[in-house]
Image (cartoon, rainbow, N blue to C red; front, side, top):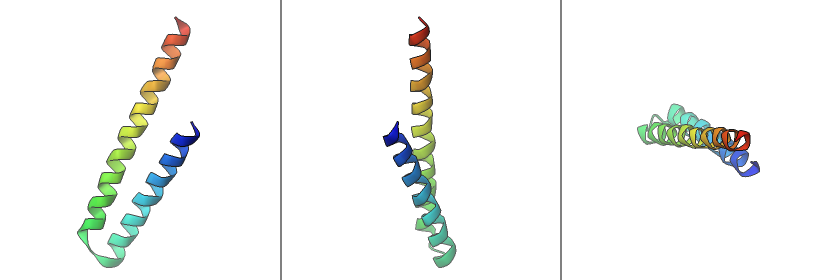
Length: 61
């Protein structure tokens, strides 16, 4: 669980830093980096939520 929090924090910081760099420089590769980091974060959150759901289902059985 601690690892998931650290990864989530790093994803948020990376996305924010990429967006700030894009606004400051106007270079579109930073916007692409931000979008890719956001997609990875959403996918990671989905996997974690599925694992939580499976844990609850298996614990109830």
